[in-house]
Figure 1 (cartoon, rainbow, N blue to C red):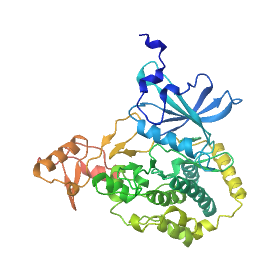
Figure 2: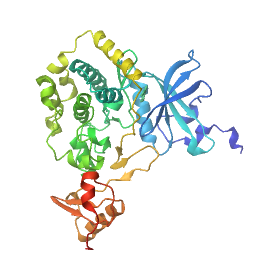
Figure 3: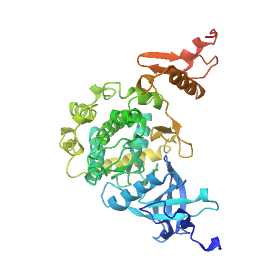
Figure 4: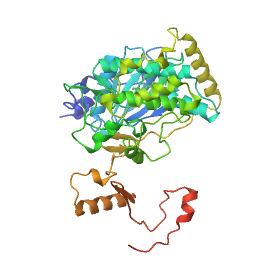
Length: 415
Ligand code: 4QG
């Protein structure tokens, strides 16, 4: 049989119930890729021109390792296909299959509306560097439009699960679009509850983190309310709480710490502080759902006619792009089924339990094995409840800054 005559998409026949690979069009020379504008966990996003539409700009999200990532790809496809008519979700122009020379070079292209203002994280970080902040009205507007998108997802029985500033984009008109549905989840189960752990550590709700360790835990759409509260802090402070500690450590801290607050509460109105604490209720059973948040005084200050706020944001984006462009950023560390993923090419790292007390079976063998595995992975510290075990590395492993590091020249004796 001459395989050259077969459609390349046939290689994926039967992989997906929702995507018919054999029937997908190829991008051909319709789209010409330009700048790389973002790198997420599952692929790169490029600005591109659509030569079937007068060379109009579009965003192309390129997904590789199709077989390995099929669940995320399906999820994102379904959300874009079915929900992209909402004003706060980018338009979806279609999915294309670009065969590579080898199967591992095959790509899927999601072609979508370009949000040329970039992410609200880029905006706030650039402002922070020049000692500026967003106004409360601007923050309230961004949060309100984000809620509109999330509420629509929730009503469609879908949770986003990775709400954060990087996934909130601005159009050149100063409109808000929520993106990145690769870890979103349709709630098929009757109760609409989930028990897999996904998201980006600093924004993750305590109950989602708990699902990493205990299989009898579950969570619902209110995990997006927590992440929204963290995003509100990010928009005010320039970064989420715990941003300066290792993501693994953050996963350990979030369920144990009291709910975070704005860094300098006195700099902000009582209603903004109150809004944040409304979202950041640790027990999700006591946390509000998305809809009632729209009634909060903080969001009530957003006028019906938001043209004026959009013009302000449009001008801000323009000023910021003049002043030397955007900070280049490292992709966030995300989690996928209990593993940390640093970038899309990396194999997910196993998350060793941070606290051995949470292990189901706690024997000497298990403890020694865990310590050994962690040590091999360069992790010398391990908790068992309140006890911290340190395994001497007998070398400088550069985990402390200058201040602490100088006092730690290795002179230790063997255990
Ligand atoms: C999209 C534009 C960054 C991403 C999905 C559309 C994922 C962008 C974008 O991303 N436009 C991002 C500019 C998009 C920048 C749409 C930038 C949908 N930093 O300049 Cl699922």
